[in-house]
Length: 133
Image (cartoon, rainbow, N blue to C red):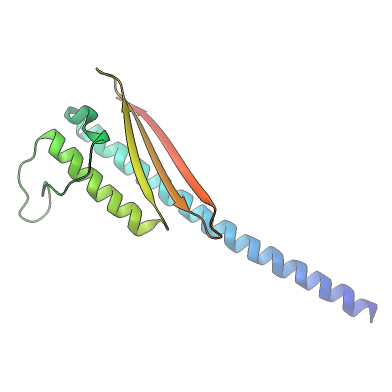
């Protein structure tokens, strides 16, 4: 009888450990996706150096690429990049949101890319990337 109680307690402990492992694995996936999305926008900023502070502005669909795309100025491309990036965040991370802040009046500009999302269980998480160009 004692052996059965000890075995039951051990099995409950293993089940709890398994649940904790699953939650941690899901959180790691979200963090990896946030890092990837932040790096994606950083690459877009590097490719569009003429936009400067436009990446801190509002997102807009300016039809800058894709089928039937038009030739856009750097500022319009930045707004389009932000729209696509924010749509990717919303589609990938639960409760996901992305914000860009730009510091500096002249080059080099410092871009702070912040991505926030909600972990399973309701905990808020964020990832911050700082880039200077």
